[in-house]
Image 1 (cartoon, rainbow, N blue to C red):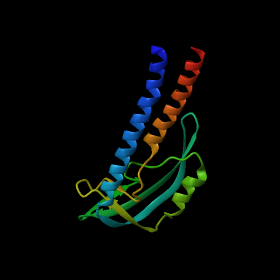
Image 2 (image 1 turned 120 degrees about the horizontal axis):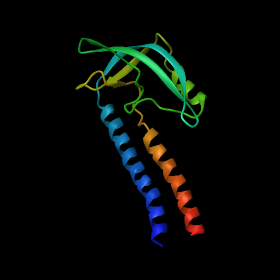
Image 3 (image 1 turned 90 degrees about the vertical axis):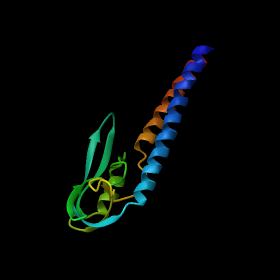
Length: 148
């Protein structure tokens, strides 16, 4: 009986970590919403791929802006980083919003202007990954519970 309980604690722990990660992502996005903005210019925009046990597509948008008289450059789309998608079309839709050479509005941290973002959506990458791990471990716990 104790082994079954231990197997169920693992997915519950991952769900708890997922919830905490999601709350942190929302707080980060809320803080960024209060950041000042600056006019920027898109330098380059493309979709890149990466493979870690599956294909992921990421929009890469490089931009330049000026804050408090200093020039900065970044490729961070959102306060938590750049999103990853399992379909290229979703990443392409974001890249299409930022053609090279176009003007953009940059949100930047007034304490560290090098930290900036073009969009203010919360990043879901970590919380989503933890939720998937929780689902997989819950499936394994169910199998162990049935077989034990």
